[in-house]
Length: 136
Image (cartoon, rainbow, N blue to C red; front, top):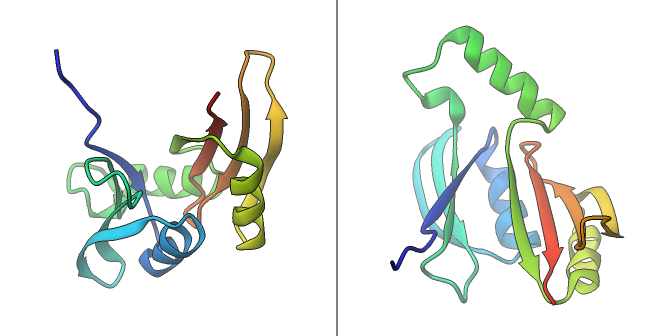
């Protein structure tokens, strides 16, 4: 079976702040920027991985959710408990230093976890948790 991850979705509440974080701090490329104002869908991804993307979307645009659900999503995003993604690198300390120097909000410094990995964590401008694992 030949299956790959094509795209994963993370919510955003400020497309310009998301562009600044994912492009300018993480170094991803902006592949698509569709919509206007806060109703923009952004597709970003690592420059050397054209087949793997993250779609940043405005969760309030989903017509299938209620106003109460929109409020709950906004509250969870503000707390950083709504969405997360795990990235990986061979140079965790270098990536951590670059993101911290770029002004990213540190949630956890590089740490050896009891379950066998070393990782760190940041929050993007929407509050999403961005965990970064160190590859062997």
